[in-house]
Length: 341
Ligand SMILES: *[C@@H]1O[C@H](CO)[C@@H](O)[C@H](O)[C@H]1NC(C)=O
Ligand SMILES: *[C@@H]1O[C@H](CO)[C@@H](O)[C@H](O)[C@H]1NC(C)=O
Ligand SMILES: *[C@@H]1O[C@H](CO)[C@@H](O)[C@H](O)[C@H]1NC(C)=O
Ligand SMILES: *[C@@H]1O[C@H](CO)[C@@H](O)[C@H](O)[C@H]1NC(C)=O
Ligand SMILES: *[C@@H]1O[C@H](CO)[C@@H](O)[C@H](O)[C@H]1NC(C)=O
Image 1 (cartoon, protein in one colour):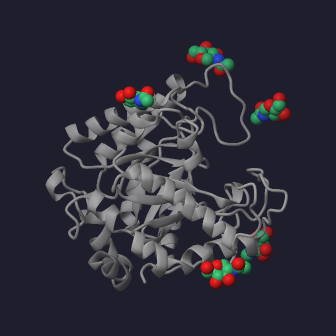
Image 2: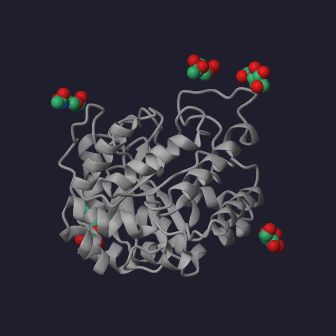
Image 3: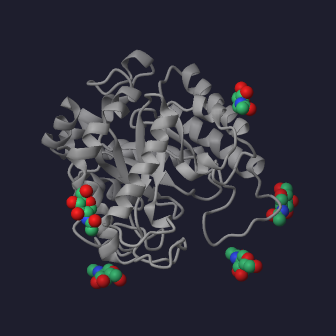
């Protein structure tokens, strides 16, 4: 609560001090909170309402572009950003250094996401070398290395975007082993960086015995997309909200009291990137806006009480249709959501 007040009342540069710098500049686990919270997990536990954006890095944005985009997010009120996709091969730790440094400069906390799918989400075909071992494992090491070098702005790490849904590692147990290994690397470096996976309820539900992953993650990052439901119609309708809630209920059942964070939610303004499962779905800017406002409207009656934050996928139409902004940087509607209530 004190943290939320600090975030909204401090000015842009002032909030860097409240936010970016003390999050984890120390390598001492005990002092790795942000001044208000002893640990990052305590901070995650306290978060609710709109937290920020998903940010696609396939375009390999340079430092200045990263700073420009993150600063603009901050001005909108964003407190966190999570990366999506990968740049180049995804195995260059120095690019993650650049991203994390840009986040630190702008006072936004970052969740670097390891892209564990061997290929990009769209527009690519598998070749014989596109395996988890050849493409994804080096990315795990790259992100681990960069986070250890620049822990300050890092809130947590996502080891995979829907790695259970896509069965990236070959089994839940194999995925859990990588999660444990990453956690051990952070612990060895004296860091309390929480590790999780950003996946849909459906991804967990189809993956058989998920106990090992359930036990390995420090908290639950949720991908929550009512748009994909068989009965989806309008972003702002009650079906969408009921679906959003039922997904979170499932994660509550896995979490045993550990924190939840909706790391990816959204509704597209067209069906170009990911086809819907409902013939009646309305994928337009007003429907997208209605879903954003639906979430914002449940700040006090849901997100605050449940202590759950949500992050919007995507920042812009780099994921065609899913952006809060068009590709030219224009907001599809005035982007504003409450940070507390
Ligand atoms: C991927 O394969 C499909 C079907 O064979 C083809 O139409 C498409 O052009 C390929 N995409 C790339 C990027 O090679
Ligand atoms: C796979 O990698 C090997 C070794 O680097 C390389 O020789 C080969 O050309 C690659 N194959 C494809 C289809 O990219
Ligand atoms: C599920 O996996 C865990 C960890 O690998 C194992 O201990 C447990 O026995 C498994 N449960 C079932 C029902 O197979
Ligand atoms: C949607 O739910 C709200 C709150 O439960 C209710 O007041 C409203 O009448 C519902 N709208 C429709 C169209 O069912
Ligand atoms: C940006 O793109 C949108 C959608 O194509 C368009 O409506 C808008 O006019 C453009 N804005 C500028 C400043 O070019």
